[in-house]
Length: 319
Image 1 (cartoon, rainbow, N blue to C red):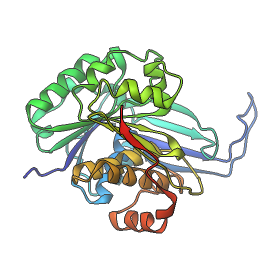
Image 2 (image 1 turned 90 degrees about the vertical axis):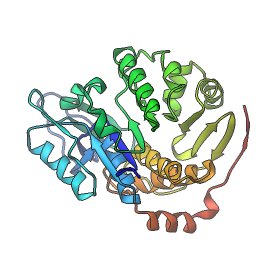
Image 3 (image 1 turned 90 degrees about the horizontal axis):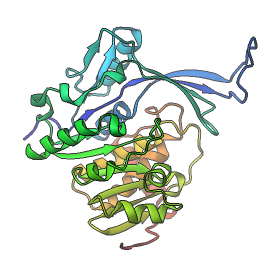
């Protein structure tokens, strides 16, 4: 038995959520907003907190600065029951910060990567990684670090560990085609619809999924409020989302990942994993901040039972 269900490797930062900012100030002006709140951010950190709240044993591996924000993130991770002993401390950069402006509508971000920019898989302590039965990765940046992700996923395979990855938005605009090579080595590969279209060059989600499923044995494409699609060994499964009042979509994709991975790591069928992912994503958008709306297992199951009529398996088949 491994001490951890999953080791999560990647970004952790501060999210400053600015609510009610409809216009950015011109030079010399001031704009008053409804509220500003401080939360833990970063896809890897949010996934860790959600998985831990659902009942899995999680260890986090990332880099934080020597500052108050770093202490805040570490404290919140500890409060969530996450083992933080593998987090490294940067002496070069402060903890990263992302400012989310007007998250109720079309979000805009101002981001300082900070200590997250120092993450290098080649510097990881493999003894710590082997303490989990699964490893989730974030921080992929195309050709910039493709080689180290290929080497890491190959090493994890040799250790008998399962892996998952969410590539996230490519801020370089490269949309590196080498990602198809990486897909072949990862057990569960996450993208959202927009990312899938950019990587494949296709004009629709259906076309993108068909292309991606030729390279990945298990690809999951998130469709926002419309739900999600999983293609597992050529079998396609779509599950619609839940209708809920949207307060803040920050971290919704990471919450979906947590729900889906909870299903995967507890050996649930794909249909159930999609249902868990959609439920966690829906609960996440009901409150400000990426981690505030995350749920424990009992609350998640109750949410699903109360809204059972809202979600259906629209279609399934083979590519």
